[in-house]
Amino acid sequence: MIVDPKKPTVKNPPEQFTGDVYLDAIAAPRESGQTMVVAKVRFLPGARTAWHSHALGQTLHITEGVGLVGTRDGRIVEVTAGQTVYTPPGEEHWHGATPGDYMEHLAMLDSASDPATTTTWLEHVTDADYHRP
Image 1 (cartoon, rainbow, N blue to C red):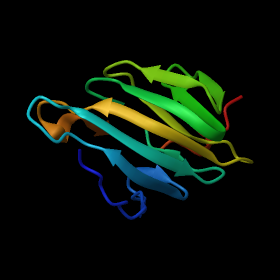
Image 2: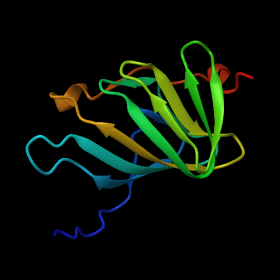
Image 3: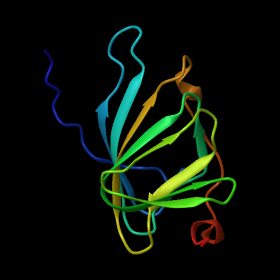
Image 4: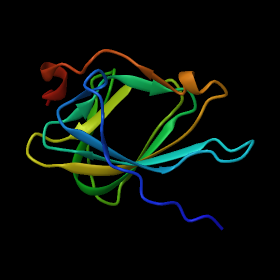
């Protein structure tokens, strides 16, 4: 058994996020054949990711607050604590907090064989896309 010390919380970079977003790493591959990555991510009100996709998909489990998840077809869903959202491989999407609430989720995904291709980051989500009804 291995008990890891808590790693420091980091602020996510403005190149990939709008607003204040903080990450706590939870799990990463340790042995050959392992690919799972898990992080706790907290978005302050109005904060969100840029558009992005994942080579092997992503699962988000909302643990606190109220969030939004948007897709390229213009669909935006509101999510709350206890709900889980899955985005399949290659689906371009964004996620974050609502304008009036913070949101925290567990982000779970598998690393691609080339870790640099696990997540493809794209352009920032415009205010018009974020505030779409």
